[in-house]
Image (cartoon, rainbow, N blue to C red; front, side, top):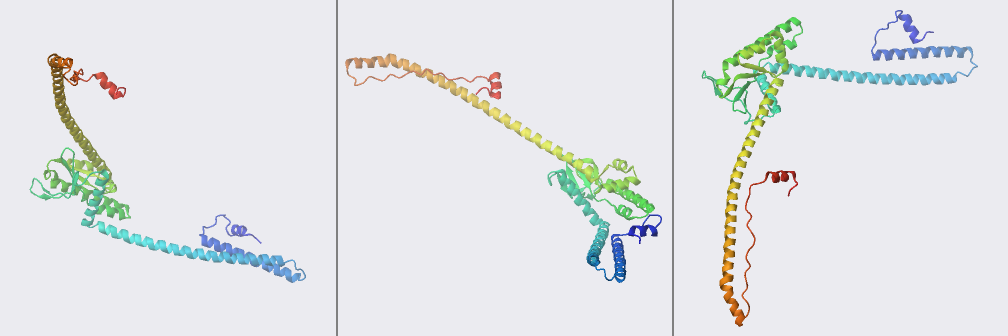
Length: 374
């Protein structure tokens, strides 16, 4: 009797067994085990008929019964696992079908010009918000104007630079050819749709150049930014027409993807921050000038007050001297004659001097900055 491996080698002399899934492999193992059990039971029964008097085979019967129960439990577990696997595969199939349906609906919606334009506007607003610009201060959405030809125009965004100039941004980009190129399964059809996508983008560049946005918003930069909502749109178009960017530059139209536009808008936001810092510095300088002028006026008042105090002290001391010489000398006669009840008090002259303001000493200022002088 051959084992499972030996039977497999006999059935496949080349030594290469076909691939089987987990369920088939488990079923084969169970069938092999059951076959081995049946053969063993047959041999045991044959020996029992030959030697009925021998009773030493009871442990073998018990082991075989235990093996049978174990195999039955394994079969039930396999059936349960197989059922769960089928249920999970069904759920995956339903999810895949739902995802396919929603993807088809999204593609259909993006083919509509209104939905496509709205998606581009949402992408543009997110880029502007990430750049850190402020609405109605650094940028305005959907502004209206009239170009030099008298036609009314309305771009998607107008970014205001720190020097007052404006940059016009348009986000209405056609990409029907790109969607068809992605859905194409044949390489020739894909190349054809990619070329069509590049032509659509080139035609839209001509359309923006004809609208003459910079003449409708003054002062404005002499170019218009064409916002492409995805880097893949522009990359795919450049595969068919590598000179598309240069063509846009020649028509005063700059093609910008979210990454390049974000870099541009961050530069604008940085210039705004520098402008605000410069304005704050000018205000601080003006406040300093006013404070210095007021300090000069106060110093003049203090100098005049000190001079007046010094003159007053001098007049006071002169008056005391005259008082002592002319009045107190006569009052002392009353004291000598015993007429006065108490002597007249003698006022004390003022010996203090008024400190004059002097220019600050540079050494004192340096010590004051270093904290070594109180």
